[in-house]
Amino acid sequence: ENNIGRVRSFHASLVGMVLPNDDLEVKLQHVGMVAGRKIIKVEAINKENEEKVLLGEAEIEQPVTAYVFTGQGSQEQGMGMELYASSPVAKDVWDRADTYLMDNYGFSITNIVKNNPKELTIHFGGPRGKAIRANYMAMTFETVAADGSI
Image (cartoon, rainbow, N blue to C red; front, side):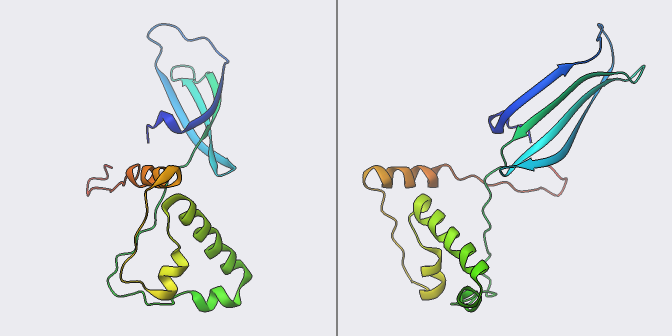
């Protein structure tokens, strides 16, 4: 993914000798999670004698993700609200999403699902509005091309 800005911590130990022109192989393995961040094990090996020359571990922040629905008719007003009313777990998920979206993007997702408003205005005034606008401006997206490139 090559985004150094997402590295939260990294440590490495040199455990073997590396000489000029040594051919090294570097292996990265996702070995766990902590607080929503990936733990990546790093290992560098001398290809000629298979000696480990570097061992390390990195803690990597996950990329921001948005789940965007196509709007091709599969959804309906009130969808998911029956479960919201009957399941404390589902209610908690919806309420956390509502709090997050209100704090960061200035709207309530449950209001949209329950009431299907035809218009929605997000205000960008004041310090809070400035922060909300910055969140919208920071949005990016990734697509995967047919050849597998991003």
